[in-house]
Length: 390
Image 1: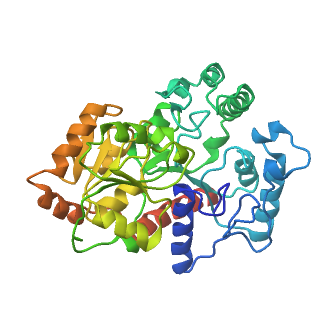
Image 2: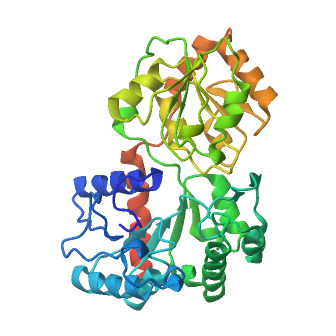
Image 3: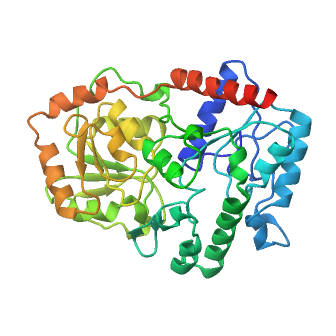
């Protein structure tokens, strides 16, 4: 299992650790490869990890485009461990595509789960954060758009490095070596195909849900609606705050760069980062949750969790969100960035005559469970391994 971060930073890492745990449970041996960090909760038996650029005494910025150090470490680990297969997640910058080349040299099959448009967009978002605009211009293979808009953190240097990395991987076709790309949303799968990746290699399998979110009964609801997730511009929380009716109480759970900009209003309560049983209770007792993203979401685990716990969701029509919400049955969809539309949908759902029916629809909604996900994953692993043995 490979990811830049070997501790639970976000959805990609939580996914990786849950899949890794299931593989171990089923009798497989799993090792991890990524960056050295005191916060790591996983690693490998030889402690072969990569130094991040912040930990290097002398830093070569071009190592973010193609890291020879990461390639050497990956080669060494592959030689010692001799895995049947490598499953990659987020690797761009720090690890880079060099580790794919290391696997290719050893003829070890690779599968990648794509958690964002990292191979299609210089800033991995399809969203120009500092302009607040959706953008898929680089899908045509001309990554100069990244330079022009300073897409990566509004920095000329960082955007230049992102541009150079994208150009290099596009030119060398290094990712053609990967056997399958697993996309948690059909939206992102279609974007990969549009961006030139082989259709037969791009597969849509929704992210799995853990047993903690299996719910059989409806929890009595309280008089609040909930936003839980990252507090950042692309998540559209400002749209939700503008749309919030004065007589409806909003609880915000999470953390992020815009925490200090949250307004102090009598009908808004910020409860900080929540996890485990505390988060589950918050979700279960909410009348509904709101996911107001303004960027192209992939497969937000927050929506899966909410619906599975019997709580409807109002979500924007962005990316993979409409794939998860049955409009009018397990929640409502609103036009992204449309404050008035969101306000109307909040009022509609809060006072809906079919609200109780919606709660039951949520409990009846079936998302893929880890047991079934493991079965599908093992089939892909087997196919990838067998194709490399021919």
